[in-house]
Amino acid sequence: MRALRFVSSNPGKFREVREILGAYGVEVTWERRELPEPQADTLAEVVFSKLAALPRGSGPYLVEDSGLFLDALGGFPGVYSAYAYRTVGLEGILRLLRGRPRGAVFRTVAGVGAGPEQWTVTGATRGTIATRPRGSNGFGYDPIFVPKGLEHTFGELPASEKNRLSHRARAVRRVGRRLAGAAPLEKQM
Ligand code: ITT
Image 1: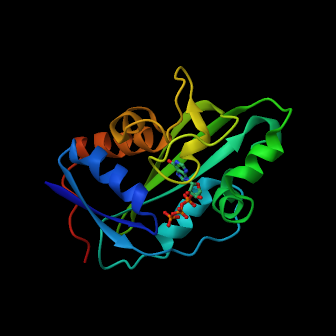
Image 2: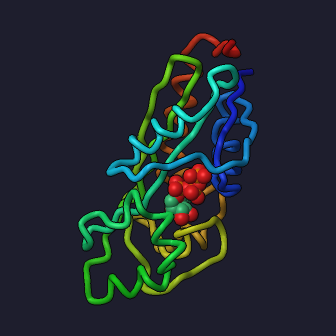
């Protein structure tokens, strides 16, 4: 079995990632910490900064960065989603969207760092923003995000359903497929 150390401050992300990669025979352990996130314009830049902050001597590591991109606001909050969540919160986002089109995309960039080797994959899920928060499953923006084709928010769906459809699941399954097709990742010296 291959193993990855997932570095993130977010327990909800860890639960999802562990479940998804388990299906590929990849065991995920969690290093709970916040990696430095520079001010950056793209999720990929943030992911490469996170990978660069990890010690070379251990790993292999998995990190990811995600964001909610609102059509009506030119993609805001996007890479600033954590900041927007902490400051204006779900209610603030709902206020910003009043009277505006409600389309949105959730995006994830996931990165694997194994010594000198670093690579990223992406995943996205299209949907709409609900008019009020609904459901208490998941975390973050889940109570207001309705994936395309469904009527329920991620907050109302069971974890298994979010893991079938989510931006993170799509990115992390790509990690799983790539690892499954690759030679075992050596523990880096
Ligand atoms: P890290 O330590 O891994 O960076 P974080 O929670 O700071 O964890 P992000 O910067 O990637 O993660 O997340 C940006 C914001 O978007 C943050 O407020 C998250 O709660 C939220 N978010 C990320 N993925 C989400 C998801 O699948 N569903 C709902 N909200 C999500």
